[in-house]
Figure 1 (spheres, one colour):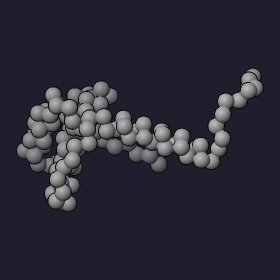
Figure 2: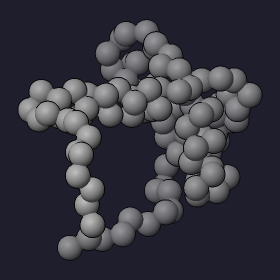
Figure 3: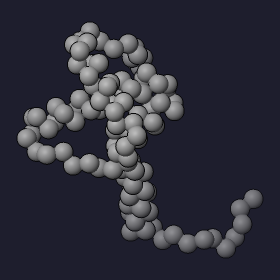
Figure 4: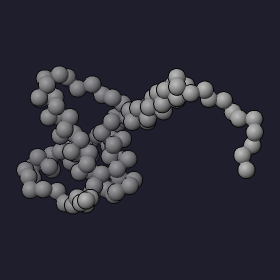
Length: 109
């Protein structure tokens, strides 16, 4: 059975939330992954949800940096578009391996 999640944020550190949102707003004019994430979410769900979702992305990135100790490598603002294009190309390649793809001569009704 599917249960709809609430859109309310949970109880947490208000200062951390405020600082994360401020950091997201500081990246709004830059051409990076966090800014493009905020713009993409804002189109669909509104300003506040876009800010909070991007702050969550920023905190997730920060957590993983602290956990692994590896430096952050910017993926770029068009990371998701490139990933989708690569996925489509891989699917086409897999189809070509198993099937012969050619236009049919007969027309369907």
